Amino acid sequence: MTTKTGDPGVPANYDPAQFPAFAVTVDMVILTMSQGRLHVLLVRRGVAPFAGKWAIPGGFKRPTETLDEAAKRELVEETGVDSASLLKQFGAYGDPGRDPRMNVVTIAYLAVLRDVGSVVAGTDAADAQLIPVSQALNGKIDLAFDHARIVRDAVERVRLDLELTGIATAFVGPTFTVAELRAVYEAVWGVQLDGANFRRRVVTESGWVIPTGRRARPGSTGGKPAELFRAGRMWKQGGPIRHPQSPDRGKGSQ
Amino acid sequence: MTTKTGDPGVPANYDPAQFPAFAVTVDMVILTMSQGRLHVLLVRRGVAPFAGKWAIPGGFKRPTETLDEAAKRELVEETGVDSASLLKQFGAYGDPGRDPRMNVVTIAYLAVLRDVGSVVAGTDAADAQLIPVSQALNGKIDLAFDHARIVRDAVERVRLDLELTGIATAFVGPTFTVAELRAVYEAVWGVQLDGANFRRRVVTESGWVIPTGRRARPGSTGGKPAELFRAGRMWKQGGPIRHPQSPDRGKGSQ
DNA sequence: TAAGTTCTGGTCGACAAGACCATAACTTCG
DNA sequence: CGAAGTTATGGTCTTGTCGACCAGAACTTA
Image 1 (cartoon, each protein chain N blue to C red):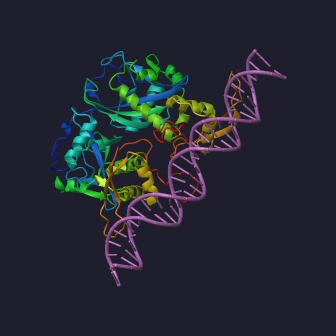
Image 2 (cartoon, rainbow over the protein chains, first blue to last red):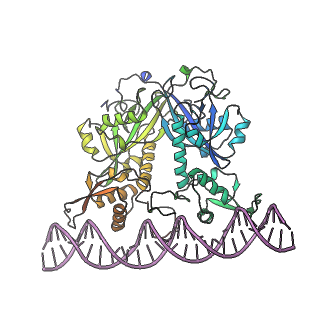
Image 3 (cartoon, rainbow over the protein chains, first blue to last red):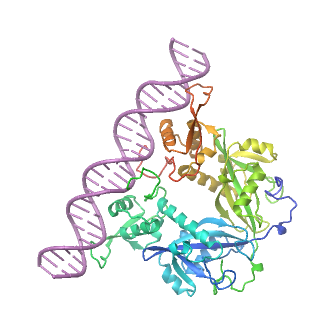
């Protein structure tokens, strides 16, 4: 036992300046839907280490700001998007050697956005790109540092949050149809959902989607024009959609 | 990691050695049941800052270990308990000024244990004590740093995990009755659960409690001796117990 | 033996959710 | 213009889950 009399775990006469120094960064996994698939925003590194490899955007925390503020600042800097409410801290990573230059602990944040594509193109762009999550995770693309693990954890978290909260509306536009919302779930989970049942769940759960009264223009393939909704409250408790692949009930087709 | 050329925040040629230095600590919220109430392990600080105030145990991360290893090491040092599987990272805290001496970012871990009392008494003890969570959170007790917030977040997390996983078995002894397990849920959630229904849920959910064949000695108040179980797998997906206070369905009595 | 207490299994009704069908409202094509 | 195709959306039916409640079993103490 180090000591109870001093700072937890530290002798009372320890010189604070001699504590092992770390750099603290805030890294962000920015997810979005594009062409029906889940994408993650990656930037290409220009300098060593890992020059030429892809990485998730992020930056160093400043002593004068909180972690959340640092994440929000980085999000604005990297994408121009100012919606801190979408940022969610989901893990800390500090394995020795994860950065060959020095000791770095990173706090990882998750952001689920729409229209990142255009934003990215407008700001810095040259080296920022949306990559399908499937590609980023199956080894096709070499991620710098331990960013592959971070992205993997983030996607896992989103799958879970989609089940428990109303995050899905963050993936779609300011107004959307039930089918668009359903497409988000199907893409993230890789399953097919019944349109009628999905609609019932979404509409019944009062407050989390709000009808606008307008209707969408039917697609080029025809069909009845769908009702347009806008997002209601985002984070809710008993989630609207339950993951179908639950390890529950026998092996029923449901 | 920001090395993107043109990042407004950090030039690419920034000298790594000049990045703001932080101390990184690992703090632990150790929860246990005692006398039917949820308790948290606190240590009393002997030196400034916050001398005399209570704090959660923790310590500095070493550059050669991972965050999880640091947490495990601290847990052993503080309580003598070596059960890393119970440790769960649940948040990072880095507000400026949270430690008046220097910039400190802490990674917070959660451990749910039984019998901490005896362990604590046996090791260092003098200044370590189990405090009812209710007292620690209602301002009765002055916690150092931002530890009140950390404890609050941890308890919130446990409430949620209790709903989604089989954590509850970590609170009870190596063998236990259904009633003991039910008491854990009732204490953490502050609700009353129907004994018969609870038993059905627990026993039906195959694998997470295992009958030993033995029976408990009836309490001094009499009654049928309860069946004894031992814990099965701990972390599961679709949790066995759903929190009754869900903000769902109208205001039905269920 | 009687009374009390706890455990434990059973039943019932409410409700949630998925499968499936039917119809409505639009498209394009002939 | 009408027919066929496509999508949206509502209805019904069945199944499974969960809580409320009751009853009996198995022990205690008096």
